[in-house]
Image (cartoon, rainbow, N blue to C red):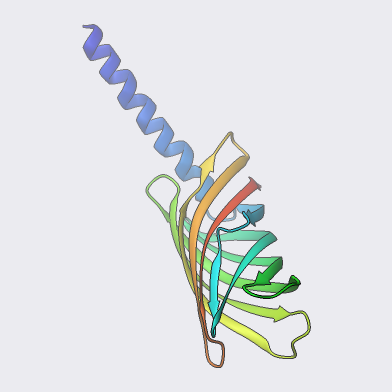
Length: 170
């Protein structure tokens, strides 16, 4: 009898957990967040050099339908190219979309525009990302993700990074 009750309790808790995560991704929900990549986690190859960088960003996502959000992010990056003595900075803007499935797992795609301090040209990247959104309570969440950016047009290079995000749901 104990096994049956324990099994029933596990099933009820699992169903509740699935429902609790899914209700966070409904039409009209807004997610506001701050993100960072830790030093050394992004290795970027542009032309013939690599960089190590720190990225600090803020973003917002709006669910246009259940499980599908449109997103915007503004980031400030500090980076140092291999062989250079000084670090430099840049500003990134990203617009994209995400689809949430299976208890907070998501996949997404977007376009980023980048302005590097001291350079006249804007760099453009297309990206894909995948990760997991875990709600700590009914409002706050953490979100680890893997992101790959590829240069578009005259922009060359590929960026692979692990992004850590903390946010709040409205």
